[in-house]
Structures are given as structure tokens and as C-alpha cells.
Length: 587
Image 1: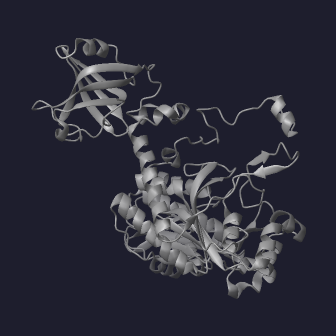
Image 2: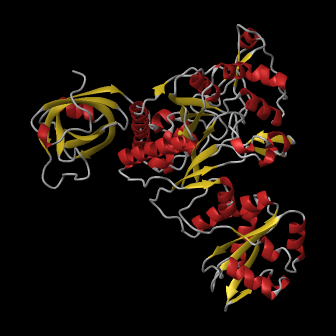
Image 3: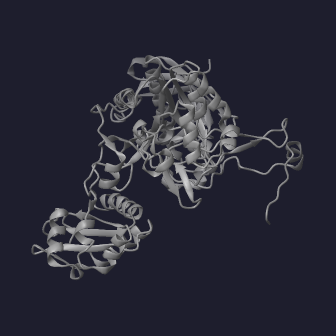
């Protein structure tokens, strides 16, 4: 018999039963003539007693045990003696008196400490990921991922969605990030691309008549990494026909409600608030605002743009704006603290950070001497600044002002402890601009992707004023992180052609890259739309992890490398020759 029970299920009900357990040695303790061993598997721990009076052979074998040895234990379940019960453990009221002990495999000394990840660097943990995954925290995270994935699949199945797989090897198409390319041996000189998302295929599924599609989809993007990005990641991918964005909102608010209720026992309040893009940029500076605290941005361009301060007046004359944040009760910030805040906004290209404070009812300090008294009074009222409050101002082009103050807002909230813990603040952001200007390439680019539908009332602006076109795009934001995004799609080939033209995609290039999709639109395409949620990011938030690497079994590091298996790696000359490739690398 291999095993009768896991290491985490025995209780007083099994006292007197003969059992067999398999697992890893977690701890071994010698107490005179008795040896105690905690045996562990993913279900929990069970204490084993090795008593020479019961089995001299077991006791002798027990002397050879070391941490992480894999063992098989046979014995009887008995109640622990008074004073030794562990109330914090499900198995804490019993122990196994061993009658047979077998060492299945031994272990070298562990290169990482699985009981306390702080004692090992992340580099070491990723190198020995198969060992890191034995830790209680990582096992909880991976089990949580399974549970959440099951909740998601069950929800969509209950609501009439079909789980349909889409290709991993597909055509390279421009979708924002760089593609991972796969050379084709049987078609020399040609390449597949790994999908950045199943976007085109899920739209084709709608054209095929499957009105409700979902997939737990693997996606690949060759982009710079950070804590919540990986070169390969997982998203909950959804598409629906004959719907409006309100239908998308309603069903996915129910999905979030189900996940949070079943996994965390938290009852979310529905519906989630909805904001348009222009409003969140005006009030919070960024399109994924955290609403668990205040510190809203206030536009004071009209007040300070012509108030005597040449530096501000020249910014406004050049088309810039002035915004500020009021920080309650922090007029006593030191010069060092203010310098640190100024250095912070410079990360986002702000040239400086002006500071003012309210003392004895008056606006003082910093640049106050450059403004006329009337402007300072108006500023105080507009900023709703009270005694001992601090006002922080940035004057620059709109993007720099919004970015710098938007991120400063979050930085201050964290620094000052203003973020409300254990609060789940969901909101929808909608009506995004259709396009944005790419300074590097000197042309328009799609803010979401080129298949997003412009608002019907803005169709006429596509050719004349494309930067004024709004889209039917939306994001779901949670606690300052975008966890999902989608849009109503274009289903008319003429509108799609106009969008490609605005993006500088020639008719020839459009036909070459998307010809099959443009043709599909000509055969009865239903109106449709969808959304995709970052599965890794969502699970990270649900389990309280600091990085998505903590909820992925085998992640890459910040350099997109796997330290465990050494990928990406070189290949031999024969493989390159079969693919018709030559390396041309600078030494």
C-alpha cells in the first residue's frame, strides 16, 4: 500500500487506526530515547514518534534522517500526551507511533531555506525553483491559483461561454509590444510569432457564430519587465457578440463578485463606479487611479498662469498647465523631504516642484513671494488648503504634469500611511482616446489596439482630427492597478480600413498582415466586444504577494531569463543551418 492518508488530514477520529504516510522530513528532534519527526506534504504536517521499544529498527533508521529526505512511514494513530497538543494544526492532537520506516530517497543539504524566503535571495530561489516551490507560502500560492482558475472556468460555463483554444504559432502582427518569433524549418525564411494575445482569433470566433468565448490563454510579449510583467503570462480572455459595453461591465462585475466571495469571503458592492478617461486624468493624473485615499489633483492654471511668476506664465503661454496637490497637516515637511519629492517628480520629466504652506492663515514659503496676494488667496481656496497644510505644484506640458503629480500622489499616500488596508476599490475607466502620439516614431499609435472601435459619433474625425477621436475602450482598475482591459471591436471593414490609414498602415501592409481578417468582415460580422484580465496580476492581489513571480510556478527573472534551466540558451550550428539562420552578433 503506497499511502492511506495525506500528512494533513489525520485527527482524533483515526486514533487506533493503522496508517501509511509518504512525504518529506520537515524536522527531526531527538528527545533522549525518543525521536520525533515531522513528515510533510502539500496537505500539511504529521508528527511521527520513533520509539525503540515499539520498533528498534525504525529508531535506528531514524538516526539517518535529514531534512528533506523522502520517507514512508507505517504506524498507528494515537492521541498526543497532555501538554503536547498543537491547537494551531489540524493534525496537532495526534501523532503516529511508527512500526515501519523506509527512506525512499535522501537529500543533499538544501541550497535555500524554504521555511523563510528572506534568508535566500530571489536569484537563488529562482535557480532552485523546484525547491522553492516546496515552501509553505509558494504551495499556498500555487494551490490558490488552481482554486481561482476553477472559479473562473465554472463561472463562464454557468453563463454559456465556450472554452475555445486558439493557436500558439501564428502570424506576426503589430499589437504594441515586440513579438517572439519562431523560425519555420519547413518554410525557410518564414516565421511564426507567439501570440501577444488571441485578439484576432477571438474576433474570428465571433464571426464564426460562437457568441460567447472564453479561454485561459497563454500570451507572450517581448518587453521590458518589472514586478507585474513576464515575457509569458496568462490572461482570462473573453469575447461576446451582440452586446454593449454595459453588458461587459455587468457580467464581469458578477465574475469579480464570485471570485472575491468564494476565495476570500469578501462581499463586493455592485455595481462598480464608472469614470471616463478625461475625468480620471484631470483628478488623479493617471488612468488607473487608486481611490483608497484623497490627494486629488487640482488645476490652478487660470489662477497662477497670470499671477506674476514668470516661470509659470511662460509655461502657460506655451500651452502648458499648472496643477497642485494639497497634503493635509504637512506644512512642517523639511527641506530634505521636499527635495526628495522634487527628485521624485523629475523621474517623470517635471522640471521642478514648487511648494507652499499655510501658516497663520497665510500662504507662505517657497515661491509665494513671486505671486500677488489675490492669486495666493484664490489658490488657497481652490486647493481647499487649511492651517498647516502643504501645497505642491507642477507647471509643464499636460502629460508631464499629470504623470508626475499622479505618481507623486501614490508615493505620498504610501509614505504617509494614507492607504486603507483590506479595502478592494474597483472602478471602470472608459472612453479612452482612440490614438496617442508616439514621439519616438513620430506618428499616431493605437492607445489600446487597432481593432478597437471608435465611438460612432466620432467616425467623422478619423481622417481630420484623429487625436480627438474617442474609443469604446474600457479598463477595470483595482487599488491603482489595471487588472483588465477591453473594448467594443470594429466589425465594419471600411471603418477598420480608416483606422489602419490613421495609424500609417498602408493598404498593402494591411492586406498582407490582416487580409484574412478584413475578408472575414465581408461575410456577415456581428457587432462584438470583449475583455482580457491579467490572471497573474489578479492572483497576486488576491493572495497578497508582492510580485507576479510569486504566483507563477516557473517564472523568468527581470532579464527574461530562467535561472533554473538556463533559458534562453544558445543552439548548435546544425540547428541554425536547418532553420536557414546565421548569427551576426557583435563580440
